[in-house]
Image (tube, rainbow, N blue to C red; front, side, top):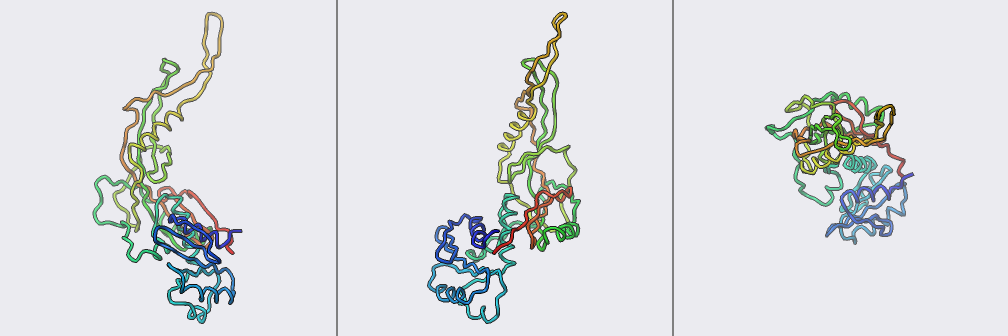
Length: 307
């Protein structure tokens, strides 16, 4: 069972806060920012009284993280400086942190609102399409993902993101020693956020825009670094041992040899950036990430009970 303190620690660490325990408070510190979270997982008049007495003397923002419903009289008695997060808010932030880890990109959350009065809006549906922008077409609509996620993670928040991938083609000869025995070719994509390298069957058909609202994410990986990852992957994938039969007069011999590719400067060719539409779903039971271009579930992460 996961404790509320552990969940609050995870949320704070998602924004690089140093976290410690200060009495009943989970405290996060980063540069000149201090946040005090008061975990409130069950009704306790004594705990509420302690919060009310200590909140005003604290430096920084104070947040009451309540997993139980609060009466209006209780809320009215709180100092106006105290920010209240209910259970839905806590679950929302847990979902945000886990989706961010999966897609490798930060999204604006409730935690950011605590210490930033004016956070720049992230690029979303910018008028005018970049000439080089290529998007894999959608095979999974919002209605599709709502129906699917409602039966699994109890989805209540559905966000479409375009995840950049560097696409490369490669063509390499295969050698045993100095003798050429064949060749291999293929198409490989590198996730420009997570550095994950994946084979693609072919260069996909693309569109230049989507009707569904979305957020386009920008690469954090340079194309040169992605190319190096592809070269390393191709080298590893096509290096293997095999048995080779040799005949020497009337003697037949089987020899174990190593097959290896020989990569030169032109072996791996960049094909540009392709954007893969990804559904990120937050739910009451967990979070889910789906590839909207083929309908595949990339990950499901179910919450354990918080207490």
